[in-house]
Image (cartoon, rainbow, N blue to C red; front, side):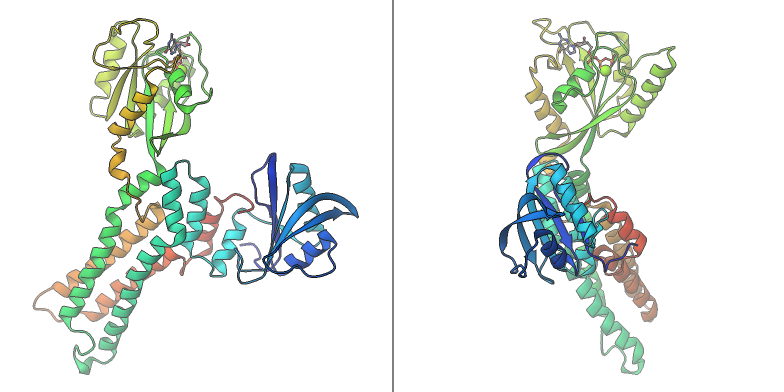
Length: 447
Ligand SMILES: Nc1nc2c(ncn2[C@@H]2O[C@H](COP(=O)(O)OP(=O)(O)OP(=O)(O)O)[C@@H](O)[C@H]2O)c(=O)[nH]1
Ligand SMILES: [Mg+2]
């Protein structure tokens, strides 16, 4: 992993134009470099916004507001300076380049947050919450990420970990001083303590499905025979014209995905190639991919052309997905006053008619209301580790519960240690470099 002792710099705001653009400096030279860039003779007062000017080679390039956060009370836990300039890519680039010339190094993705973690400002769950918060596409996702950043999961894992630590200390004492018998920990107390621990881990696990659905969302594929308006509907729901629409059947030959917000939930919408038998090699590959997407979807939206009677191809598709969760929708209701297809939800991808009702139906079919409460745990990495801890704790509980045998304390202790190791990996107290690399590489530069 890269050095954590040098001073790093990056633009913290998104690329492109904006009202403001922020350059962040962090490390022991941050203050000196900021003073050099602003030609300031006196030190920056801590945590005060100072209106000043940045010059490069004695040429002023922008007015900025500089704020100095001395260590350890900064985002990273190091000396940090934030320079708010105008949101010009050219100006921001010039500031970063000047900072590098003055001794800083360009930050790696997520390096500011990595330093916050390494300096003990936040734990690994909170660092991951930062990335989730930045990536959130629905208000509920943002809330779950923010709760995690505020420490809800930290608290839940910490409570289990503390109770476990306490239990292990007492059990170790019993192992070390066997002549004292169970003085330090009676078997019944051990059982009760393990019951309490496993009920806490299973409580977390029961929130996991909900949490994952909030964090990762649902996949919904739009399928149907060619030309029914799948791509048109995809574009209408996504709010952008991403997929090509033409009157020629067989237009879409690949799967296209976009993430949309359906009643506050993240839905990965998939546009697919029209399902039909075809000689065309490219189209056939598209059809194969469409079937794959159909298989992996949480819900299949079957689109019919409401201006035409139901055809064999439609029936075939309907019979193929009989065992999948599905929603059947009749499109092109703007063409004919009365759909020829009775009993299906009627929409027009062209005029937008019925799309709000379609969103409602989607939300209902996915049963999103049952997910409304904000879950404590949502990240698969955390869930897997909590499951691992739960398995070890249950094994320990079973060993203690065996009647008639002397309690094999050493084995129980080994199980508890494994559970503790899993919990330490959730919080990052035990975090190998490759795990950190994996987690922080998904951050954007400047975060
Ligand atoms: N009148 C009307 N035309 C529509 C509607 N939706 C789609 N169309 C038209 O139907 C034709 C096919 O639309 P697409 O969205 O490309 O259909 P598709 O299902 O993606 O087709 P393939 O990709 O070939 O399978 C285009 O000419 C669209 O303009 C609608 O609601 N009303
Ligand atoms: Mg299409």
